[in-house]
Length: 96
Image (cartoon, rainbow, N blue to C red; front, side, top):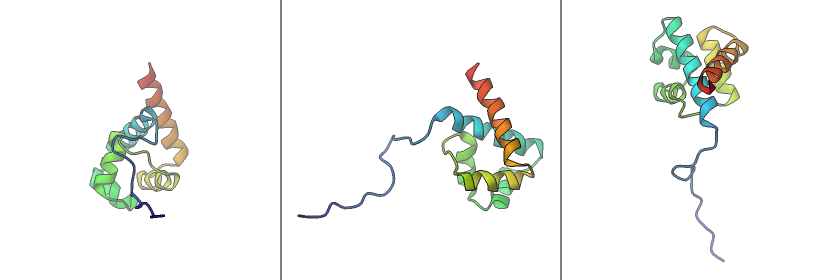
């Protein structure tokens, strides 16, 4: 029996997260970042991630892991609870 090759990543068009919470989290990050007058590139540097990845998070194209959420909140100078509360406010706005 021949082994099947391992295919890295997800199939094109597949999503592993719900889009609305991802968009709400991204909007919350962007709102707090602009409120603090921080550039996206600077926030990415402070969080220890690539600027392009931060852009995907802010656009809601990527739902970050818990570890990344903690890094982003630390880089924003707020608690993860404050970041989640802001996310919930944006989620409520999207739903209404």
